Length: 326
Ligand SMILES: C=C1C[C@]23C[C@H]1CC[C@H]2[C@]1(C)CCC[C@@](C)(C(=O)O)[C@H]1[C@@H]3C(=O)O
Ligand SMILES: O=C(O)CCC(=O)C(=O)O
Image (cartoon, rainbow, N blue to C red):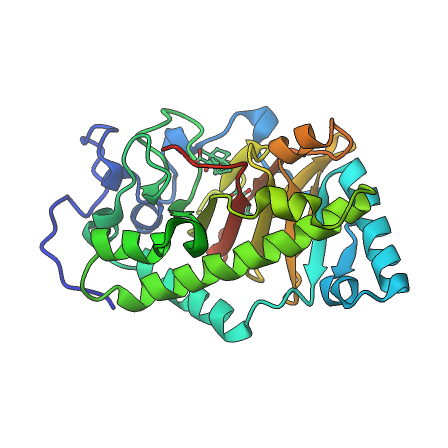
């Protein structure tokens, strides 16, 4: 996939460049060029990652068991989801039905995209007000506490609703020749995540004691955002954050993380980790769904830390309320 391209931007980090140049803060390049990260990526002392983080106890929900209709399995799944959602809004889902080959191809294409030359990635450069596109460190949006990551985001609208393949079309329009397979893989991944999110909405409905189809029908034709998070190795991981503390403003997030680890949730006044589980996805309630439950289910602060030994990758699928206007 790697394409030779005539660099339209300086490929190297150059202290004399202004902050406005996105290629100036390509974290991967920064990694190679200095043992010290730029000040813009250093977080305040009270927000820096700490070493004393313990794992958060989150339930592992067997989705196939719930969908089987077996009353014992349904009861167990809804009880566990209800308990976790009332406390911190995070739970793991296994037997989720996402094809293993699709998952490995999704990671393969993530590797090839984020390791491509900056000028290739910038073909998909996210523009102001757009929800789709490539962003390196968000230098255009923030002037300090920059996240140590690069992202590629796609707006997803169900094919049945918009009669087009929004992810594949975006890649085709912005990236063009040589990226056809990448567009297909992330279109397929987003479609699979959309199906999974509606099954989880059935589970959430029953856990709240309402009819199983209520939230499924409510979210049936909603838009979503698929976000690829690429966290390069960081020479000073104790000063940086991959994704800063936040609650997801959307309704539901389904996160697939690689085996490196780095997701942390702020529960009981301390950061707690959610270690990777190769057979599970991490699901969390967003602000919008918290509001839909009148606050019964919680949307919790979470963040991603980075490390010096290896890069980290995750896929976040954000189910939104209705239409994504931008
Ligand atoms: C709707 C969204 C905006 C962000 C991606 C999704 C859900 C979480 C948001 C975000 C991750 C919160 C932290 C800051 C942010 C800028 C980021 O670090 O990526 C947020 C995303 C965004 O605004 O692009
Ligand atoms: O990569 C992670 O572990 C978390 C990412 C996240 O919180 C986000 O993309 O909103």
